[in-house]
Length: 83
Image (cartoon, rainbow, N blue to C red; front, side):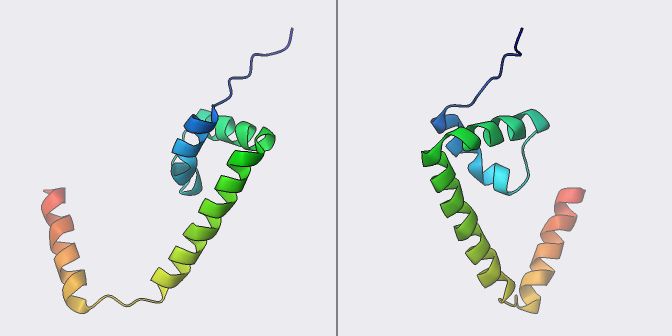
């Protein structure tokens, strides 16, 4: 008997693409997204677009320098949330 494979729908897959790219899915969610991408041309194209866009955004953001005041404020906010 063949195992039952649960596939995500296109809507479910697209809703998880950002988390998939950020590696924030559970192992089962990861497998289900990857299975869907292997068989769905539409979602594979959407994934390619999202991956390229994220790469460009990361590249652009890596060139920005935050002013020292922003780092200080961020450190204060983090310290407050840890208490």
